[in-house]
Length: 143
Image (cartoon, rainbow, N blue to C red; front, side, top):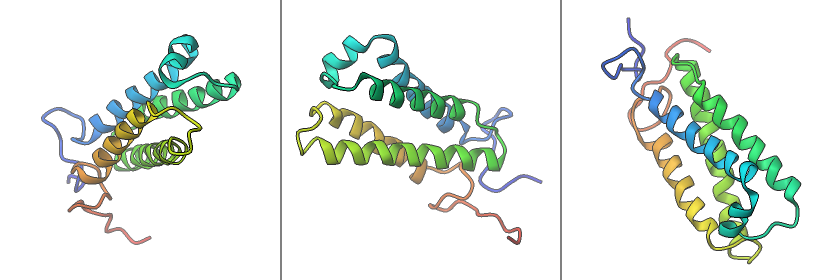
């Protein structure tokens, strides 16, 4: 018997697994960039006073991205990938929207804000992830 909301995409993977993989790849790339070449990162997003903080956030993004890339194709694995994806995107979006208007970070962070809004839309409005609003089935098992 299939799990509602975990329809297959024609292969062996649930239809929503691509979200975890795509967002994971995005987060890994976002973390790798400042670790591999901080000067180019700072050229786009502005000079940083605390390089250690940039590296810390980059490392966290690598960890988040790796976790998303390794998400299991089970309903619980997909729910966990969704939780970490939504939490990460919402946190980064909030930072962008608070600190750009204050002039603390460059307006180029609004590009990141747009990307984070897109990831939130992917996770919150698309079918294929169990337990998500928008017509998705929720577990009928007793808690």
